[in-house]
Every structure is written in C-alpha cells, then in structure tokens.
Length: 126
Image 1: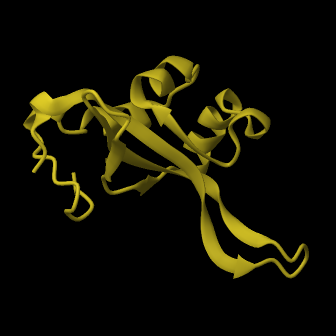
Image 2 (image 1 turned 60 degrees about the vertical axis):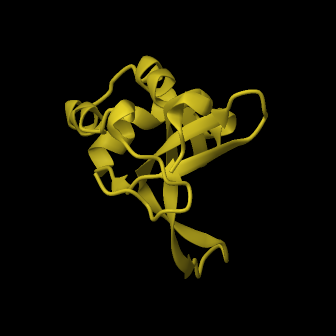
C-alpha cells in the first residue's frame, strides 16, 4: 500500500476513448471503434521529491450515443485525439453540456482520502 503522506499529487484522471472493437473494417481496412466514449477513471499520483508517477485504474463504463454527442464537441479529435487522459476537474470545467447522467456517475467516485492505494492490486471497482 502507498503511504499518501509521501505523495505530492493525488487526483483523479479520466481516460476518455473510443473502444477498439477488435475487428477490421472491410471498407477501410482499419480497426473498428465504438461510436460512444468509454470513460475509465484512474487515480494519478506523483511521489514527493521525484518524478515518479503512476496510475491506479478503476472500472470503466460506456456512455450512450446521446451522452457522447453532447461531450465530444468539447474535445475535438484534432486537438485531443480519440484516446486521451484529462484531469477530472479540467474535464468538468471543459464540458459545456455535461449530461446529468455522466456528472452523477462521476460524483459516485470514492473520495481519494478513503481509498487504500495498492499500485500492484487489481483494477478498482466502484
């Protein structure tokens, strides 16, 4: 377990991406991706006095097509790509039309001070 008193930064990051469906398009020959965003929260931390940083991942969830269409314009692929990490607070600030359902889901993230941080443990369910 990590001792939180040794951490300089401890915050939530979100990995926002279009999930790879694992198939190739017969038309383009490229991989097929879902039409909806997947959001996978992670706990990002940096150890004091070092540049050592890492993440502990939490379980992901898929947005609906409507939720994705509301959020995607705030994160243009030309600027962000189709798979990006963004701090939770910055994400909330940047979303001009954040769906209530997504906000409600993010509000259920456990408080960082209540989580035991095991960098070698499994993905955290929440």
